[in-house]
Length: 68
Image 1 (cartoon, one colour):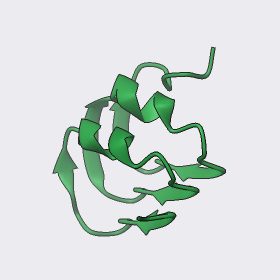
Image 2 (image 1 turned 180 degrees about the vertical axis):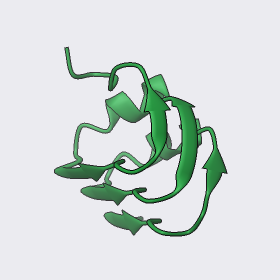
Image 3 (image 1 turned 180 degrees about the horizontal axis):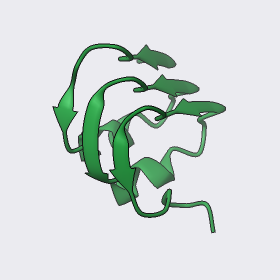
Image 4 (image 1 turned 90 degrees about the vertical axis):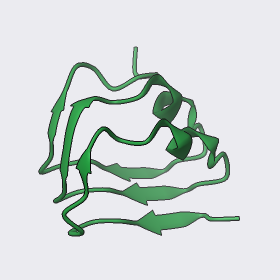
């Protein structure tokens, strides 16, 4: 079980994997400074345990799910 996941600065590209939404116990997610593009998957908005989320320095569009 992961509570902290740091995938920053790995030159990851494409869409953010919606499977990240399966990590229900995640407290911190850092996917900054990669080459992710497109919309943030709706399932990421269901990570209610997340206290820290950094998706900066990517090319993402749209709204962050679950923030309305």
